[in-house]
Length: 531
Image (cartoon, rainbow, N blue to C red; front, top):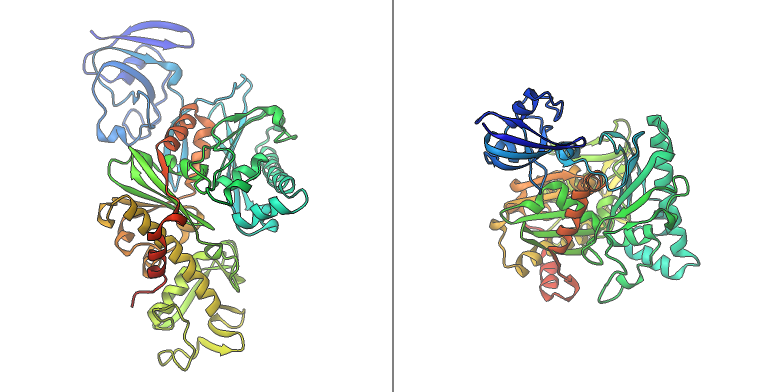
């Protein structure tokens, strides 16, 4: 009969199993209450993780889909005994992080010492425009709450370049921006603790991800070197800061970890996103794309990625657009044609207050279908547009406007169309340059992972219609939402996940687009709209 050596908190002992039975069955027959199996051992919940070595059956496809990356963990209910084996009970605990509705299991191994009375941790996604903070119980891995809001550094500049300039030129500019983001995170954590009925004194760890500039500003380090060639950051992070660094006076005992960045314009949000989406495990070529003010992308497989970044500007986030706004209540988020007439929806219902990025992409696609925008990106005046569009097009001293709702002053101007055109060309040219540099084809890309809040809201078909996404990849596009936040949570809850972020970073190469002649050529081509 197989002998199972069990390593646990109370020492090491052996139990007997039966050849062909599952490891879970053998452990339960021996009276062990771990691991938990909420699905009754049917191999569907992914909870009965165990660190296993020795004579057992290999993992099948159903099991592999539920396993955390790396290590020797198996599902006890799917692992059958073929001989003697060893099981470590300390590694049985796990937690789950959510990436666009799908749970990803990670081993529950906090990298801070958690007292018996418990401890809390916060995962922070510092976007250029928005900040998301999640609070977790480090003992159980349970998500206790989420708090989000606009990045308070926006008053110092809408994009990373303007914030670098402010840090370099304004009196105490760096200190003011660092203070703003740390206070925002601190207040969010305090609010989450209050709602969960927990004390801020329990907060022991904070993980933060963001683009490289955001991480510099959060850490209080000058990003000046990133603004000029060769765009080298002061720090690529990936280490734990001590509580003595004074990040958060409200919970001074907390240790802070910043996710490892690849380069000056490819940050910890991308390494975290590659991890949480599972892209870093791909056997075939995948493209990971995070569209924001700075469009960051990575192309590769589990053997490594080539990364790059392109300055798309803030248009897709509603900034610098005449009636633009973020994707919050009151924003037009969808536009479509109904019997030849444009229609729209509003987040939260009611009267529209503006239009957000997903609505802008839809509106531009609708304008192209109506023939109101020509191949060069020009919004046509009523006398040049196809007949029947006079109701929605108007030309005055300010130029041409496409009206969605005159009553509430919701329209898209020719200047708005131009800014969207520039933004989509930058993203599309970056993709083409990356493919050309790596000698890959569109056909070779098995999946396009579309990350970020904007990416999760846009209509993929419309994004393809305006040339933001390659039309060939629309059917293979998978939205993974805020994968950066999910990666931050994984790095908070699991020492192994944190180490894997560094391993991902170390397998990434950076391509500087400003020195690539191919990028300029593709950018000019991508300015045009297909007929």
